[in-house]
Length: 76
Image 1 (tube, helix red, strand yellow):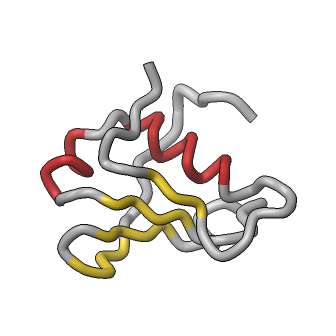
Image 2 (cartoon, helix red, strand yellow):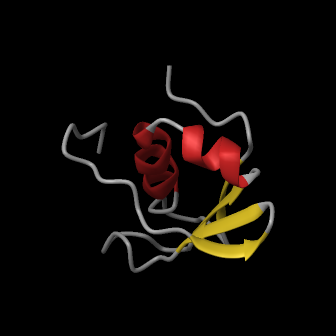
Image 3 (cartoon, one colour):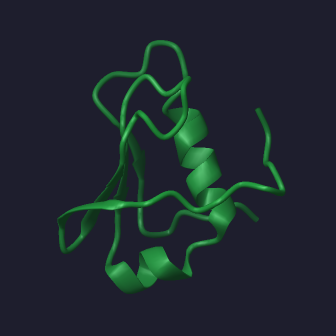
């Protein structure tokens, strides 16, 4: 899939103060939701490509339950 220059940050669903979810409806190919474990400030400061990367992970065959991104999620 690779990074796309036109990728837009998805709307995140707040699960609690430190868990955020991107629903699997965000990309047609997603098999599971993507979860990000971080404070709101850290999530707000994440590069947009982190969201593209974690939603790409959510499309992989064999993935179960969720794709996880930790607070140190980065692309470069």
